[in-house]
Image 1: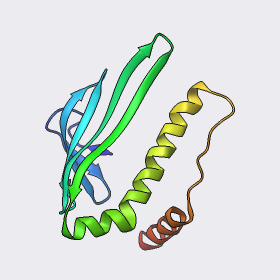
Image 2 (image 1 turned 60 degrees about the vertical axis):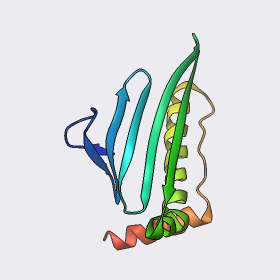
Image 3 (image 1 turned 90 degrees about the vertical axis):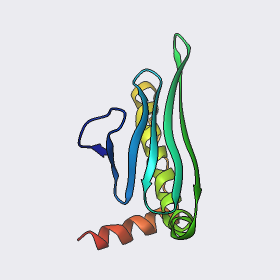
Image 4 (image 1 turned 180 degrees about the vertical axis):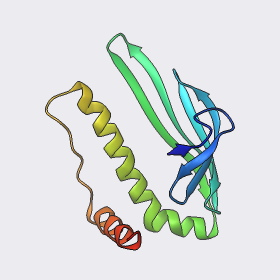
Length: 123
């Protein structure tokens, strides 16, 4: 995710075809984004951090959105699978800082196919 103005409430940015505006931000608790693109994505995407004990922290990822029209097709056919793989990769990297053996979640066939397709298109 890239935000030209940095991470602050009101900053606009995103990644690939997904665009957001930072709606809430407290580096100790939450970052919440409101979708602005693609058309047909209506709702929010957020990460929340909560200290449970002195040695345990919970990081929660939530997408709360409704899709319409082309947005529904984009979500169902590609973005959902790619997004889920991206979040799993991120959580694996975070967990691997603190645990052994290292965790690597394998991508399913559909994610591997979509990533190859996107890589060809970007050449």
